[in-house]
Structures are given as structure tokens and as C-alpha cells.
Length: 138
Image (cartoon, rainbow, N blue to C red; front, top):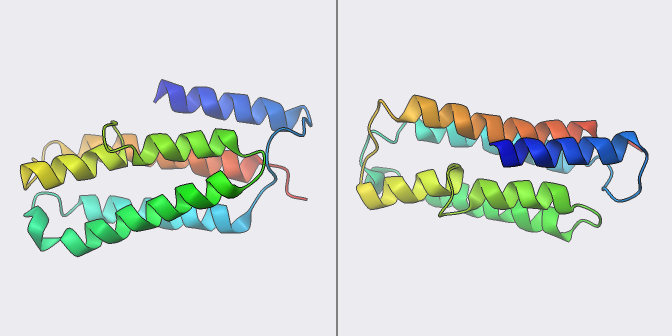
């Protein structure tokens, strides 16, 4: 999470100083991040159930987050946001990508583990959303 905050601070500093090395605000990026946050957290509520019962929903989230990453990667001067999405979807990481792999490999996730993990993932999404909303609008 500290790495996320470092990216955000870096991004906000660049935009606040008027430096042209960060992309401009993109409504599609903002809405995509908000929608993926809500959908991902809702899906995590089902992690106490068997993964096999939710495989299509998990695959949908994986594909949609990968598309969000690819979209951000294709935007010029958008390395900070791209790096944040990379952390979010990393299957070996501690955010959404890693959680989905854990669920798949374990079959179920302990209901006691899910609320804390949701907080961490929500915070990661909030950092992405916050960075996008702080970008120069025009």
C-alpha cells in the first residue's frame, strides 16, 4: 500500500506543478475504475463459497481489469496510473490479482480473511480513482 501512496503523491505533485509528464483526466478511466472497484468488492463477498461456483464472475473481473490496465498503458504520459493498475492485477501480489489466485487455488477463502482484504483492495482502487480525479480536466 505504501508503494501505491508513493505513486499517488508523485502523480499529484506532477499535476500540481503543471508538469506535462502526466496524462490528463479521462472520464472513461475514472468510471472504469469505480465500476471495477464496486464489482470486485461485491465478488469478494462470495469468496467463502467454492471458487468453481463463481468462476465466470472471477474470469469476467480478471478480463475487465486486464482491459483497464491495457487501456491505461496505451494512454500517453500515464506511467503512474499504469503502474498502479499493474499492482492491482498482479497475480503474485497482495491486491485483487493475488486474492483471485488465492481463491482459485484454495477453493474457498476464510470469511474472516475477506473483510480485511477488501479494505486493502478498496484502498488500492481508491488510490487509482483519486489520482484520476486529480488530473487536469482540460
